[in-house]
Image (cartoon, rainbow, N blue to C red; front, side, top):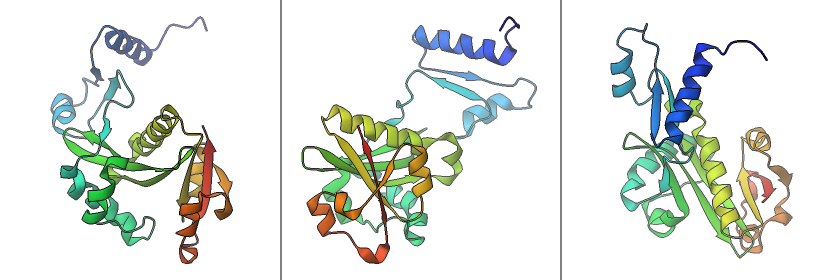
Length: 202
């Protein structure tokens, strides 16, 4: 308090003001880095800080033409048995449950909200391009799905995971049991996977 703002904070304030004025996104770059503009423009990761007007602006409903990219994203987690196997036939039926995170025209993350009755839904199929994992895309997708469930009048979301329980606990989920699952989901639970159950009241 009382100290002059750092240059970085001043730039962020200017970027925020631009966003409020209608600018969809602002890039803050270090001009001392050689070729920084080209690296920012032609790299999907970029070299600076991008300020968006909407944290969910890159998230959209999945389309059938996204299936190949989504399957490619999921493949590493399928090989490690973190995710259940899904194929094109599955997506023909369930793609409307999915959303994708798109960056520069390429799908970099995905996730699904599968409803169970009028009060609960399962968050599933979360996968993110490892190159973009540091950008918090998985968190954004999960938050987006939570908000979608809440706006849909649901009371609770749940998920099953074999290896990432600590991660979901850090997002506010609480450990539950198989008995807490909706009846249909409980009937299809596979004990061999030893999946842990987590839930979150909305």
